Image (cartoon, rainbow, N blue to C red):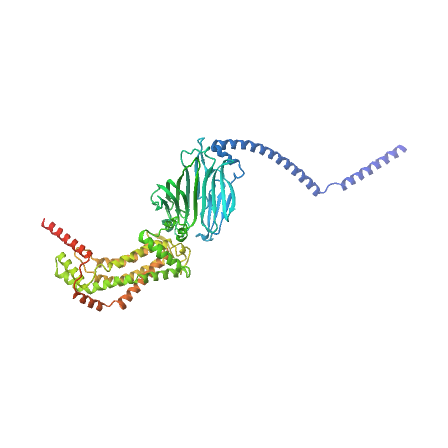
Length: 626
């Protein structure tokens, strides 16, 4: 009984102990949050271990690849493989800027990969600034030949940049190194408030590295962006211009793909209102320039206009390269370019000879003065009025001569009927002119004097940068056409829009010619063997306005505005002279009085004309006798 009772007590004791232990275990078990935390800790430790293993592996691979790259660089670049081992061997950029321009220069190639003009906006609706260089549209490369027989293109290798400030100027040194003290350097110096920057290219310690028997070719290319409203109009004024032979300027014919020019001192890749120029103090011996028109279809090709390329030889001196050059990235502005005194004003197409003189010494200063104080549209109108008033005496001389011829017309008709022999009739006509004191060419000379001013205006207004993006009345941009109606189709020569200023100018020229042609017809008698000028003049009354409509529809509205007020002013001056200045009765009386005086000796022109008439008549008779 004692044994049984002990066993039962033992069992109960063990049960109590087990229950207590279970209760203690239950109370001390971890929460779900603690379980999750422990799990995350283990996973993190596993990942750290895995990453450590990958890092070790990557380091091992990188070390192996580095050896391979070094070997590859050495095989390709020779001594210049040193540059690939420097910290600067990365696709990074250095920016230099002033109040006018921002330039970004890349480590790779050491050249400008972004040129932004801060004071000019593009045609984009978002109003972005004009960028002459962006999106890899430009390149600069020097092909270096090493003594190991390798060709190193600087555009493909890395330069080491160092940016400093010297006397307020930003100085950026870009060095392509073949060793610690062996390098090719591009040195950019940007001054405050200037579009022109210094650009020196020199080598140091490379005489033992490079093959200097031949010049190193500097290759510069630029694919010009479209910056204006009309791609066709802009493309017309986009061209390569260069200076050579100690100051002669010329341009590359747009139909030529490539041309070689000797002793070149600057090359300009000119767009309509902006230009990129490379200048050198040491002339390039033989430069190869090329242009390619990228606008095949104006509706499709709307991003770029032309592709320009220049290959410029850099000669070695004592085994080294040393050229002091300049870059210009800025507006095609006559005053700005002329201020550098480097013949850069010739880049602006103001015309040759007398046309260029009129623009440079009259139009540019006068319009520049007026536009300082009033809006550009009003400045054009006032400019036109002043030019026409200055030409009024010449207009008066021309109309006075026509009036004299008109008064003599009845007597001239009598001579035509009286004398059938052309020589005799011409002799008597000249006598009448001489007695009356009338010069038949007096009406032509004033008109010829006005022609240079008219042609000069055709050169001046398309080149006037001031008009760019300046509006007047309905014209939003006086440097481009003033479209008031978009056509759903394209008319050959005319375009796919309607410009209003050319229409108004055409109407003005119609009334002007209609008003003056009648007097010209009455003044000029028909000469035998000569074309009927009266019929030609009648045709011109209608042809001139049509030509104005067709050719000016795509021209800048500033030029059309000038022609509109030019014709209105001329018409007004002619009306005033005819009705209030010239008195035909007084002219007739003066002519009759002149007839009573001693006849003047015929002018040299009259003598030459008389001799020519006699010779022509003699030849005619000689042929008739045969």
